[in-house]
Length: 110
Image (cartoon, rainbow, N blue to C red; front, top):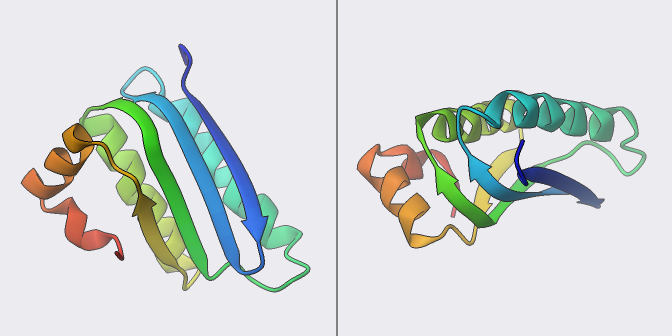
């Protein structure tokens, strides 16, 4: 994954997922698997109830291509399937531009 990583932490009904590095074709498959495991794990151990908000901190993302964008949209679908909202936190200008140019920004709650 070349320095790309994903971290997760739960606070009540909120799951914070932090992404670091590049979201590209080389890293997305492993990240998507980790993202699925992370959301599933927090559903299983959700002693405080189900996750209702998924916040994805993308401030540390230094590159994102179409594969990375697909992963973010897939994360949003995971949230929707769990009847949760999905928020992107701190997108850098390059990611903000990609989200707006593809109209994917509208998929994420602000």
